[in-house]
Length: 103
Image (cartoon, rainbow, N blue to C red; front, side):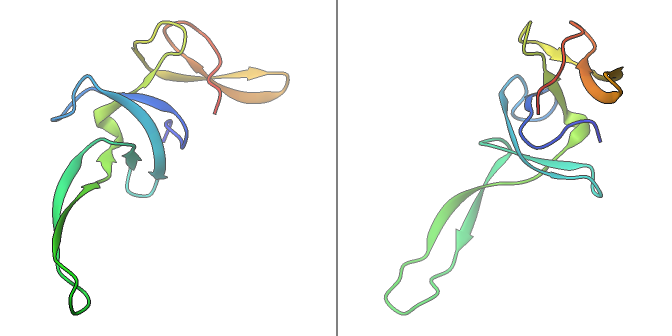
């Protein structure tokens, strides 16, 4: 999986298409990521204690990694991720601009 925690991504498919956000958590075994403020759903929560009220809360659900693209820091558009060797280390680069991805 080429998208990691802390990356800024643009949603390219789904109800949040066109919005961008930061990856909070990555689930590589499931190819899912959790993005801050994206893919929100309403969850009805029951009262747990006596006297407490039930409520409806907003909750972010994980999104499949194929529905997002990395946001290029130089151009601000969606880009693909590539790898390149620099100083004997494998680093991630943005395919559009060729800039190093800091994460």
